[in-house]
Image (cartoon, rainbow over all chains, first blue to last red; front, top):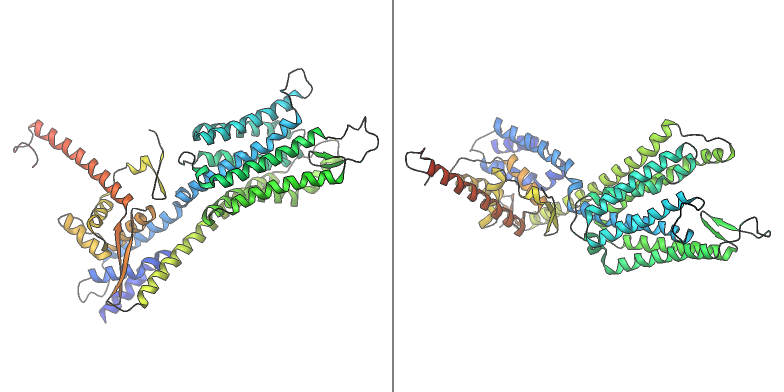
Length: 357
Length: 131
């Protein structure tokens, strides 16, 4: 009877542990506690009770803090850093086709050209540094890009807040590249995880995007002053004189996007989900801007002065991506923790169902 | 100090962290598991033997350490048994855990030899040093 009382009281103390921990260790701990108890003991000793409660607190604190430091996140950060830098490099190929010459200070709009060329050269260098295994220079350059882009956004905001909001997703990508490249990883880890086949596919995607930009440059419709009433199809910076050409451009961009998406989707689930969580802030930001700021952008286009965002809108633009990141990280952690615990619990159940030795 | 990641057995650890001294319970638990796989209560008894009765681990301490060591890949489950309706899970040291324990042993030995040699030379102890 006393053993039952003691077991019940120990179970009460063990309830202080997180349920995932109990699922794995409770029966085992109980066996150890009962094995160590003197005969006829009915209550846990004060020191034992204190030790169990302190242990429960330690486990809870440890489980809370250890997630992002683990290997899976380091791998995800390495791949995300490379993918983001490569995506930004691919997007900046736009400069190569837009201005197929180096800017000169005498030319019109040379500042914008210089910025676009610097972007292309910068992200190209970051990708090369990652490929060479020079992680710190790559991260350093990415942080310089963050500072430069933030400065550019700040300078443009007064006169053109719409373009600032429209390019926030690119700034977020830059921030993600810098942050993920800063997380320690072994040399060329991202390449090892992606493998030769996926890297080839990503290079192909970049080549397709580059070809679309180049074609857009070479086949650009004449300017309005020399045009003769010709229809021009426009999609962001892409311009075409026929519907078919525009669809071809869009098909090229979509194919490149799908190749990138499939390359990530074909990775192992733990890595894929983590990469998804790290990219989720960009998606949530784009959805937020499209869902809530379309009217603001239209109003700005129809007025002769800029309407600036209200503080609450800025809070949402900063807060929503951060909350999305936190939810994504916690959801991945939770999913994997539960799966691990369930697997271990099943192993225990299987063991119990076997005949006693 | 240069910080870099060591990649071993599918796990990373910061080199500077792996070089940090182990806490005594961790060191003794790894030592208890070094020779053969043991279950929880076996580890408690073995640690008591290893430390000449000086360290008696309690279940809360033991399982906090075991959980962390498993998460770090230094130990793993060897097998499970049910004895008198009670679960016994045996743990064993992994190659990574063995390397970490060996590194700690080398560190402690180096420090102990240095201390012993200096005490011997100091003449502060009547018997001339430490046996």
